[in-house]
Length: 250
Image (cartoon, rainbow, N blue to C red):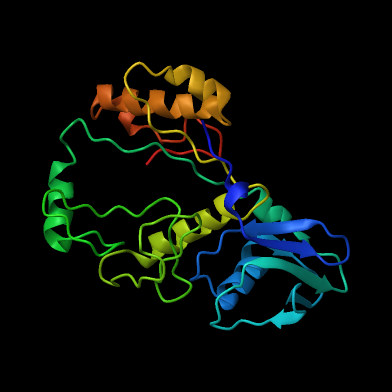
């Protein structure tokens, strides 16, 4: 069953004049006021006039500082009426399947990354048995000097860690950070899908009950077709050819 991101949000942003919710997110500790102001200005909101954000509990005006965002309610004050960015509301959030290699074609790439890094590039931990280096889906930032920010409660001990600049592409991180904003801060947030299907599980029943069930089924089907086709015609087609604009396989 999919999980709703609303349940763990501890920061809410409102229109001071109407009380309407403009955005919300989870703050574990490393998201700064400077980054939150950048997110509001460049991704989530459209405000025609000058605007300020105030922490409701104290009335303090939030500035683009390096201070951590304090959990609680925030109000946006403006001569005009702030609203969610209509352009950004249409910006695609890309869901993805869990990647499981069964063909063997990716072994050389995987082994090369493991040999190069020798550890997980996100957590910094070394796993002598099976070194891995995949960025968790809800984690990313390049706005605070490649600092890791998590958007959901967790015990990964990676919050605030600075990534090695030679290991992860800045362009990829910037794209992924924007995707995290769209998934976690916009509206009610995008669903966190069920991905654990033990033997005997009715996967189709789960997909039918979850949001975007049809699209997830199409992604799974396309992934299997590409594997069965090898390097043939199906594999050469764009990964979004069977889906609507919000979905893509990686």
